Image (tube, rainbow, N blue to C red):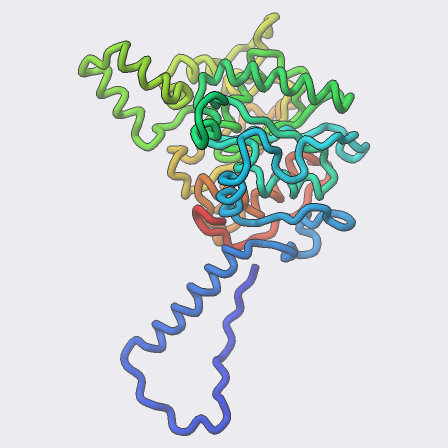
Amino acid sequence: MTIERGADPIPRNAGPERPRKAGEVHSKRMMRMVCAVLSAGLVGAVALFPSGAGATPRGNPKYPVPWTFAAAVPAGAENGPDVSPPGANIPCTPSAAHPYPVILVHGLGANENDDWQTMSPFLADNGYCVYALTYGNNASDPSPFDKFGGLGDMVASAHVLASFVESVLARTHAAKVDIVGHSEGGTMPDYYIKFLGGSRVVAHFVAISGVLHGTSLWGLSDLYALGQAYGYSSEEQQFFSGLCAACLEFLPTSSWMEALDAPNAHATSSEAATCPYDGAAVDGVSYMSLATDNDELVRPPTSDFINPRCDSAKSHITVDNILVQDQCPADQADHLSMAADPVVAQDVLNALDPSHRHRVGCFVVLPAVG
């Protein structure tokens, strides 16, 4: 999106110009720029994809696509955690152009409905069979606490994902699936891929602000280490795990993360072969990792990047690490708004169909709202 600044027209019969206070002209210009940026961020990129950007769906789009994460707020408040986002979980036969159904995996504290109000209709409009699930929540909790997914142990969540993938394959008769995950959805699926047989049926794994190599999680890792040093009891650890088991598993020193990152050069009956430089890269899978400098949850923001040395024809692994600001300085998305980012959406299309990659356009994206 290009914001052009032209000369302010002088109205006819304006008369002599009144004296202006120091800084007034600059303030007005700044206000106009701020308003333009806010409008661009809130409106997003609806119908604004330039020709050739690769994000304009072919034919007539069936679903409106809100290019703002703010759309998740009313959707999350109105609907339960198992209500599908627009375009998802509809009986669908994959096309020859897009033979693999796309499974959307939400992030920490989210669910299938509120996290995918943008990406689900966008992918459906672009001809993909889209499926989504909610995992890691306690359905017996009273509302709204039952809506907070991703809190449970990620090993258990990976088994839930494995069952869901099998059901999608059975319904669509597809040979493989693609996975697009946001936040924890860019982390937990790699356990499924590496340890639960997912490498045999996952073609592409796109991690949007994922955590494949651990995160400090707002300083939780430092707090946890301090607690350990001062006698953090097993009872206290169990209490915290009961609230959010996945939170502790995100820490770089957790046994869960260490197992995910440990390279394994030789496949066994239960574990897939990995890149020798990065245990999170599994043989036979194409990876795209998308990060933003403004990520307040994933620190460092590039902690989901795969070692580029893993991109090898010998290992049949492809790696594409993208920092959105390197593509588009106007994109100031944070952790939340990455899920509704039009720049990210174009990258996702390129990841799912790498033989028909398109130029990625640049749009103003704001933190939180998109």
